[in-house]
Image 1: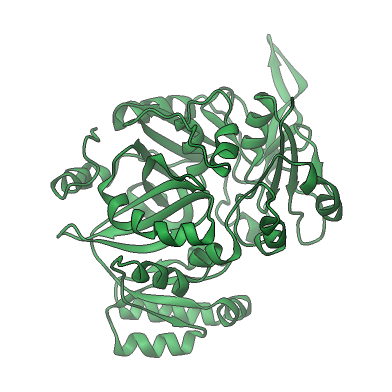
Image 2 (image 1 turned 30 degrees about the vertical axis):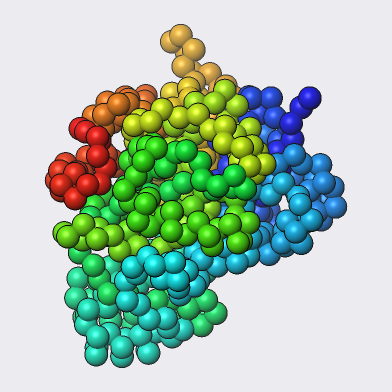
Length: 448
């Protein structure tokens, strides 16, 4: 019997999942939220069909689906709340669980309520008040937005003057002022140490047997230089026992049980030199490109069935304990600014993007000049549909092996107009930090 998957996507995140689910025998319906002008986004055009009528999604496809998946916890979670209460098979947080991520203050309180040590923070809804506070409290050097704000607004300042400048700069943008007034943001004390996160999968049967330790590479350039892009790649490891999970993930179990949570939960921390983890934020959904790392770690023949099983209280996820994965984002200029510059990024041929290691993102089917023997012929093939064409993953028993695997595949991908990626995912700061983590009892057994 054919299984049916409905994806309610906000940002063209799920093309890779659609293609892999379809290859495993699932019938897939994909709603990819249209642009502000109502036009359909081009990701996946010619490769898969998209739903284009949201009224039809509600009237027909919610009842049709065996599994309803959301990669986002902003746009469709409130609409789905009554369906969740009726028992629809929805893999996404409820409204209250989503607030643990969306509302920074709520997230911090949820940690302190279960005994997790948190960083001192204060909530604000306007930039002037925040700037005045920083002048009197110079240790508060980290700004974190709430709601659906740009990741670029997550800012770690070097000193009070640095942060006050940024607050004054954001104040000049009417859209940011409006967002701050609506959703707020927090200022936190800056903690110094090593950034490390841990996640796991929770459902009616409790936690999965696996935990997902991960290190994000957020900056645009090697050696953590440049602007914050959200993420340029992730180093991850699958384990069955994690010291960090014991400290900042497992204590939230009663809260998740009370909320009836089902899905991925992640807590990102700064571990200070004394070994104390200081949680910064929950992620109550899949992350990106973490979802692609997870796809690489999961060894099930069917990449979707284990998610449905999780929803039904069964832990059927199959991974290799200790396996390491490196994911590398392949992007095009003007990323991460192309949505502001409106640079044309469609139609560039993407060659060499085949195989399980390649996770297609903003691409579509098009025509491009192709060499056939010694002749140039226009042939159909994969072309770009935005500034984020693909993510490449590689796995191994060591960081070095995972990196070799990933970057060998990256080098096979050819796109005109200077595509770029970070060459140091899994390396860079980790060469210095991993021995320090080992001394504090974290990431045990992980080696270069």
